[in-house]
Image (cartoon, rainbow, N blue to C red; front, side, top):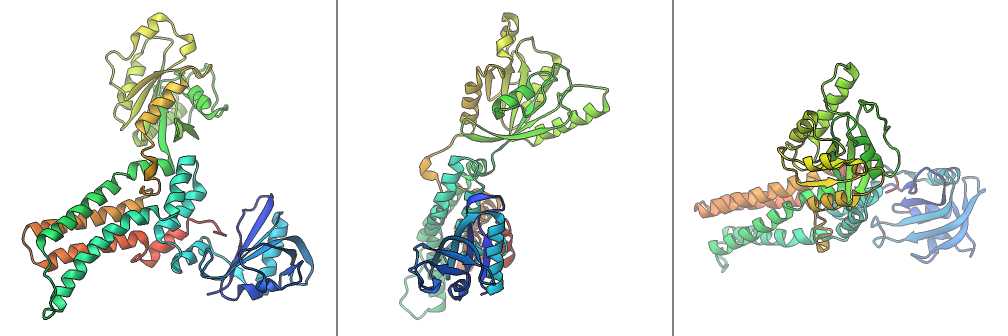
Length: 458
């Protein structure tokens, strides 16, 4: 393979910048751009130990002073000879060093090419490779912990017993059919039934982790809805911790959706502040209301905001009715600091029943902890021991679902007394689906699509 090189620490000025190199012959190439203070060529420096020296351009001029380290394959990230240069994080310095490596014979690495080589060289399976990008993109500590555990092989360890059981079934079927004269014990239907039942149960349990995995990785799409001046934008600002949305006493201030990501009760919420839902003659506001309705329909969670300082209106009841059509919704009585006894006594009488009802003040912050508790209850973190064994994206979910469905068909074929080849066909289809998940049987376009999500240098 070609020798590849890339800046691994982004384009912004930083204290330290890293340039990575990988490929057969990269140590000799690095001899041309690094002059160690100890006088020894880079290619003979101790492995996995930093060496101090100077980085040189194609003309031998000093670019910077810093550290370099070599990682002989297969004990490297990519599984092949690799190196890293750690220098000052000026984008100019990093670019000059990268140009020097190109002049010496390396080429620019493609997005995700280092990790792709790690996969191709057997250092990672596809679930671990996907965990790398999940770890880079993690926005919460819980998401980072799950990605780190998956990078350590958490999901692979869940899948391996299932694959081994299916392989045992298929290999014994083939042995009996292909070698009839050998003294091979026939495959007993009850043993096959037990193995298929166990595989189905495990795959079903794995599929049950999809919702938690997606919440952990991508967050919860959350629409804040209510009539004009109910306190929606104030709630967004209170959760965000700064004035993200404009707040005024004039109804209809919010004309378009405003989005912000916040951590609430340990759950990442993708908040969407919407225009107040009401009938209006204003054409621009009408478009905003229409977008509000669309945001409400596509949300995983709805925060239905009601002005708690006044009795419920017909518009409030309409908002609550719309919110009740969502998978999960919380009634939020706002303006707690302005409440009066009459308004407080109205409550939710005669309206749909939400998953939770909280009262709060976006001005004083009183009651925000109630909202956090309600959100946390709707999206529980789960058992910490599950970290690394959650399905976190649609590709993984689809592969496991196809495997589970194939196992079910194999069980049905066995129960119906069909010939062994019918059972075998479905068992092999399940194995193919699981192999696609880990990368054993994944098609080239699937692999390419996964690594195209990576940044250059990783």
